[in-house]
Each structure stands twice: as C-alpha cells, then as structure tokens.
Length: 258
Image 1 (cartoon, one colour):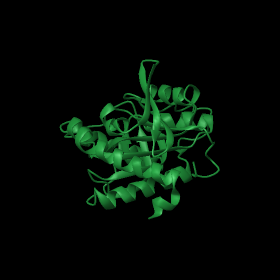
Image 2 (cartoon, rainbow, N blue to C red):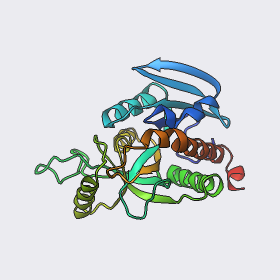
Image 3 (cartoon, rainbow, N blue to C red):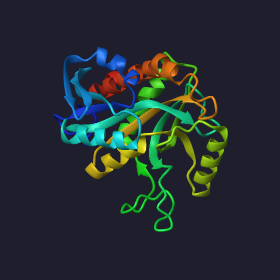
C-alpha cells in the first residue's frame, strides 16, 4: 500500500459500519472472499482494488463498536480502521444527504463530574479523540470525488462528531445537546452512536482511524421516519462509492488524482 509511513505492509484495512445495509455493496464486490464468524459477528476478509481488507458490522452503540474495533485489531491484524455510516445533523449548515468527515470525536453522554470536567474521559485528560490526519485527508478527498460525481447535490463537511448511547430524535433534545456542548467549547457537526468509542480504542492501540457519516436526518422529531429506507437506498450507495475511491487512492495515488 502506498499510503504513507503510517501504514505497515501486510496489514489489513478494516472497513467498519454499524448496520449491514451500510456496507452491503462492498461485500458483494470482495475478491477472494472469506467469511469468518467470531464473537457473534461475521467478518469478511478479501481484497478490494488490490488491497487486503476486512469488513464487518459493529451493531449499534458504543460498547458494541468498541468490542468490534478491538477484535479487528487483535484478531484480524487491522492496520487502520475506516468507519462508514449515518448520523443526525447538529450544525445548521449540515443538511440531509451531506457527508461529514470526522476531525475528532467526543462522547456527549459521558459525565464524571465533579471528579472530572464534563465530557472528559478519566485517565486520558481530554474529551476529544482526534482522527488520523493523513487517512482522514484521503477519506475527505474520496468523499469530494464521489460527491462531484454521483452525488453532486450534496456537500462535504469536516469537524467534530459526537457519540452517545441514545438515538437523538427530538428538536428539544437537539437544542439542549447543542447548548451543553457549546457551553463546554465543543461545536459539533453531527451526532451518532459509535464513532467516539472506536476512536478511543484506536488511540489506545496507536492505530490510524478515520470516519465519515452520511447525514440521514436533522436529529429532530422526524428522525426515525425514513431512517431504514435512507440507509438502504442512499447511505449504502454513498459508502460504496466513497470507499472505492479511498481504496483506489491508497493503492494508486496517481490514479486517484486523475
């Protein structure tokens, strides 16, 4: 892989999602696919665009995501993790159908105060976990290329994504969450339920991590209505197009720039 000094030869790139529909198209195009069932999950090993990959679904929530990320690293020798999925918009400028590339993550439901400042993870001395700069830049470029092609009506954003073990789906809840975060100095673009947990696991292992989220809703009172249809009809197509471009860029940077 020609991705840079952060990549170790022989390792696999892990592609992780919370739901099956978010990566169904990728599994269909695996070369030399191998199905392994472990710890209640199905892992697909194979090659995409000449690169060794492992695909799996974490299921919903931070605990499931953290366990799956650790398994990818310890059992399947993942050399980097890329998360694809959906999220609800928090910032006014982020619209349904847009894509947010994570710059960093925070757990919006973590509060060990007064022992520690709100949102700070005990023993880490920080609330935010930053994504890998080079891998995130490659992911953002892949997103921009995909949006310029099949999905020209959408925009790409990059910044803070917050995670919590709750499906945020009310206008009042969104307003209160935004206010709490802003008071603590955190201006978030989107909210979901897994990314911060994976970011912390990757930080513990010193592993490159990047994530993108397609905006499925405004995290308001109507968030639940078309969620499943959006994931299967829209987000899965985004994920396939973007991940394909990312892998092309990692395997052949010159081809990626054309």
